[in-house]
Image 1 (cartoon, helix red, strand yellow):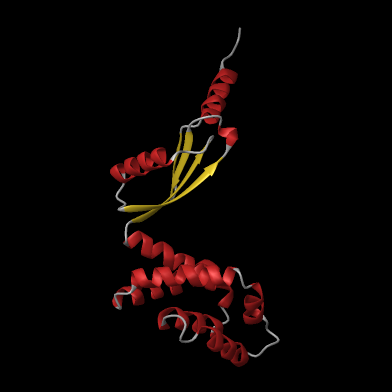
Image 2: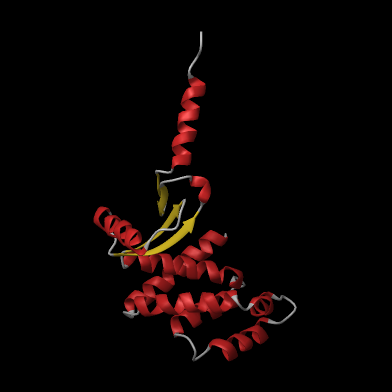
Length: 182
């Protein structure tokens, strides 16, 4: 049910943002709201507390968010609260953010390397990824994982390119175990 909620409400928010010509603006707003909510676990506890009547939780929601964020996101937040789906609000925003980034051709790439990359190396990697994909820009996340030994692992969506030495050694090891000795 949760996946259905995030898709239905996230898609509705995306379509509304596009109709109003505010997709880019609401993308930034959604990311900011997520950041604020992540740092406010007590607010989520309040919104999810069944002992507090929905009307009181809605008043608290209005006091905190109304006139501080766009009506599209605030309305989605309030509707989810009324329908007892507030728990999925963060997932709805994640879905919305993903849809806007897809529409705007913003790719999200995760790059793992054995050693930190220089800014020049990062720039060359990003330039190459822009050449071979349909994206106009990337949101890039770098991680150093010494266990890779060398090379890198690049993940964009569900596509993974693994050119790490660790993987090459694992593959070679599997091939050697498959050789039957007489």
